[in-house]
Image (cartoon, rainbow, N blue to C red):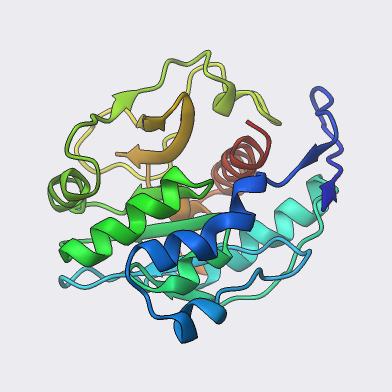
Length: 243
């Protein structure tokens, strides 16, 4: 499938989905999933959508359910990506269905716990073409970093410089992430995890980016702040699909 993007700032070349997603069902088999379950792994079709990751451990993975819907609408307006505008697309972190999505989103307050099987599943997903965006909605950082070590014990999150392409992929953010909510008076930070040179995970801290996607009456953000949050969300998706 070929995707065409109209860039407000600079053009993006015609691109294709990472061909490795064609092999993801085989990866599921290697993880020990039985053949019947593996046969249920299939793409979501030609339209792009965002799946939210459901996890255990007590964190509210489900908060602000309007966030993805508003981001998808904004993405549809500002790019030519073929969008599936719908909410309540959830996927469990240990499920074989994870491999159906090229882009998944995780957020929450509080804690997260991954079993060894879930960590293995997430690692296989990321190593074989998947992309995970994680937004700390406050109080999520310590538990998330701890559980990420189960997924990639040999890797470290690294802070991305402001000249990294994710900050310029569609809209320009020369000073990095926008600050959406104030909590501890810390600057927002964007961290990445790489596999074979590809950014497979992007993590935003002290930013609350996804809160800026939610309906205006949820967090009462000024329209300028919401727009910046949505623009940065577009950048993350564009980068994930084109890098």
